[in-house]
Length: 143
Image (cartoon, rainbow, N blue to C red; front, side, top):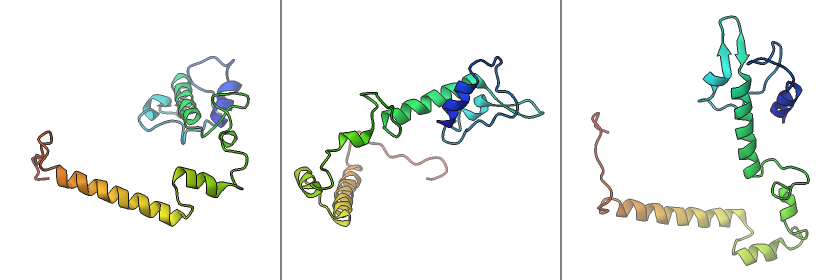
């Protein structure tokens, strides 16, 4: 949200980079592979390329909207995820878990997942050498 505030507050500014003294949040917004495009080092100081930064902000916003990490008030599609839960969820938690076939105990739930994962990984491991579509080769350095 801070990144959107920076963009909004500098809509009228001209230029390819943000003015000096502007704090632009980068962590969690600009991916490592985008940093050379966003951060311009002219020898004197580091500057932020506005266009590249805005693309990163919008990409991050898209991802976070889609996974509902953030939500938009009044939007049907990107509404508050708490509204999706039944209003009586806490009172009827046991019933809902039962309908889904999920144990209430977290340790029992994770144990069942662990057993299922181990079973499937063992099946993959056992079946891999005999699978005609899989070819296992050694690299030049022996690994």
